[in-house]
Length: 300
Ligand code: ATP
Image 1 (cartoon, rainbow, N blue to C red):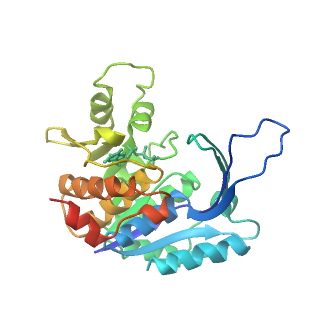
Image 2 (cartoon, rainbow, N blue to C red; image 1 turned 30 degrees about the vertical axis):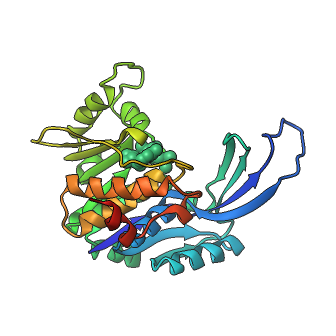
């Protein structure tokens, strides 16, 4: 019943502006807000809200942003194993205009220096049922965590976002790969194709390396591909989308939570799609993540 997430945590600074400023221009924002972010942080909160006993292993800087992120994780009942590094916590600076156009600058900060997992961090991985990771921290750290988790019998999930080449040694450590359509095509070497069934081809290609592959397709739902079984297309749950930021993170966290209870990949994906559909109907990444009761009440 337990999930451990190893990944990034950022504080996002969002400035609401009438239009995106031109180079050299200074604009007044209509309002601004701070939100916890980073794929690791968001997915850990999503797993906890979906009902899993959840730990988060991450790296923060030595600043006020770190205190805010610690508090948010605690509020979400996530058990935090957080290092404090010299220098800044990861941040994202977002400008957002009224039409939904944005610019985003990310400073990886302490996420970029997250190396050499300690024995306490490795122990926290080994005792979990499910290990969930993304690619906003150094690849070496992802590889070390995956090896520890795999060896200890955890179900190891990689959400390969933001997409980059996966080292060959990482693939045998993975049980499930979660990617969106764009990421699937890049990883499968099919980025140039315009064939309509390309996501299916990509899923089958990736299945050669990982026993189960989930390709999320936004409002078109998702594909679940497992070795030895037909690929299944699950439609999205009906939703009036207001803000799709964080749909992928909500999906991954809820999926990990369901798997940790012994649910099979297909049913876990359906549970996660329900959670993600609920999240797109509200603003923000973390504030929009639904809890277990809400997911269950919409599942049938
Ligand atoms: P993001 O990076 O925007 O958080 P993503 O690209 O990683 O998202 P998506 O494929 O956009 O991931 O969405 C993940 C899942 O969320 C989808 O498989 C689907 O189940 C659900 N979802 C996304 N958008 C919608 C929508 N408009 N209506 C219903 N469900 C949605």
